[in-house]
Image 1 (cartoon, one colour):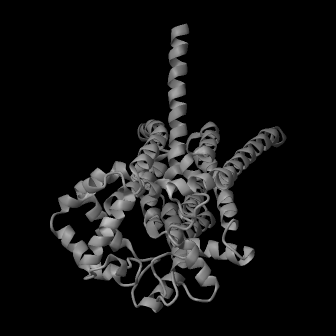
Image 2: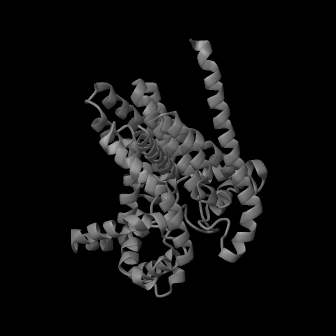
Image 3: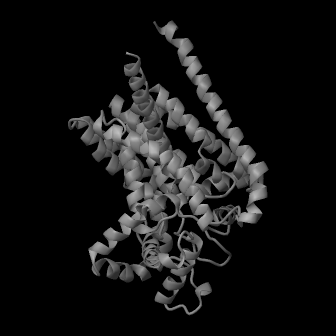
Length: 423
């Protein structure tokens, strides 16, 4: 029995290796052949968020700062800068080493995509989703740029794939590993902090309440807090504020609210909208010149908190309307109208079959409910704060899994109709 299973197991492993190698090759070709020709005309920098500068200053002994003379920053979590710092130490420079590492990350993310798809819907969906992940333009696009989304996508996919394994095994060890992955993901971006609680709620909907499920959630929480806590302590020591991973959430909320209300001034233009909101925030804080305002500075969140509370007190319906309207913008809003339309077309090609897969999940066995919940969690949270199409990158793995499930459902319906006609 065991011997007869080995050939199929080896074929599956070889297929996954082939998909991962394809993903790696596609990302390397895009990064080193195509991207250099696109960067100039599209105005794309390699380090738009200054993650690389932050990592270099960290390694060079200047501190966790964006520029010389600045105070220690709390604006970025340490997860992604730590990866870049390791590349900088090993290679002596960030590029092209960081691009190679991100190409490898893009190849590796196909593996948890396969496992998630297999656990939720079967082998065919797992293989198809892994292939779709290898070729998804959004997962390829950020490979040559120093942005945290590819790493966050990998760590979240590992966390969720391991959470599915823990749910099936009931093992506290698997729960502990799940918590470690969630903790690492939160160190990249604290948007992941509440996701384990949301997934725990989803798992409760999937099955009767089990004592071991509650124990697993407790272990996940302890492991996650253990990973995050040292950086929380560091943030308190350098700022005197309790900041779990990084600051900027309130600033994003204020900026996102202003961008929503003034969207008509720069529709489909995230860069221009961000500039408008920066001018607004600078004026709120008493800066006459926007160049003097730095939204990354420690204490900006606290200074803008009264304005955020005022927005909420002015009417809860405003936040609800903002969230609903921005739900679709989360998927496509980019730097320019052209980029936004291209991104909308790309996302639509995957989201339409994913909606079919999501519908199948809700009316069927609900095995894919954790994936649907994760997508909704990101979508709603960012819609309430501030939207940009690239923020959807970490949930693309679950979109492609649901899209593969949707395609399988469509193929099955077509096959059944053909069979009935023949009969």
